[in-house]
Length: 104
Image (cartoon, rainbow, N blue to C red; front, top):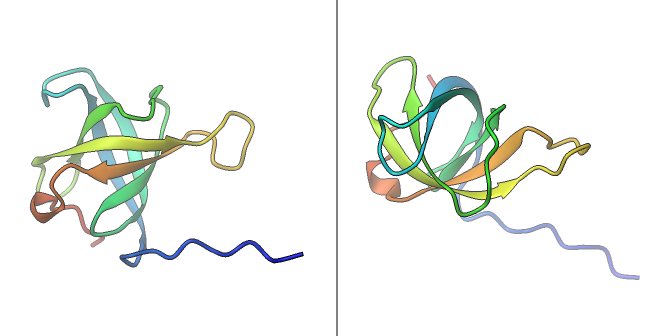
């Protein structure tokens, strides 16, 4: 039996605990939900949220501390119910060069 290979990441993830608002939809003024970034990389972030997110959904990430510009993102994956990742989701920034979310 061959061991399962770990996926190779293009960019390093950095652990973080950053409070954010997730604005669901294309406009930043849409309904917002409290969330926390758990880790962040150049291309996206892993968040913990109570909002019901779905893969492919467009969200804006708005940092609650420091610079608060909306960062357009798309949900890539959602942790399955009952799993260790329940309540978590992976987000990919729509334009990583404009994303200004970094750990303190």
